[in-house]
Length: 115
Image 1 (cartoon, rainbow, N blue to C red):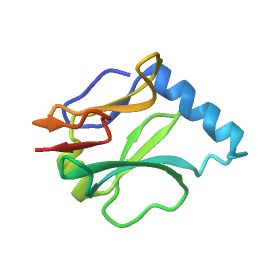
Image 2 (cartoon, rainbow, N blue to C red):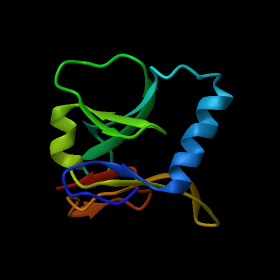
Image 3 (cartoon, rainbow, N blue to C red):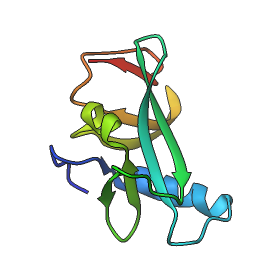
């Protein structure tokens, strides 16, 4: 997927890993989607959240395509607009990475940020 400044996107590698995790958790229903969000906390002030969900909430923003829906609440979207979700499995760590153009500072672990 291409990065669009008005959305949240996912790389092919992250898409593949998300689908693999859904299979491992026996999630096969098309109603499920990946929910991304932001909460207060972490060493830089804000932390990323990532989970699978099947219930939309009022005000949710919906991204993605027929391969995987990505859903984000409006408050979190203000911090995540233009973000690309990637997956790394190299020597320096393994996991999902948020490539967030709005972050002015990130922590060493990549799980928290500041704007």
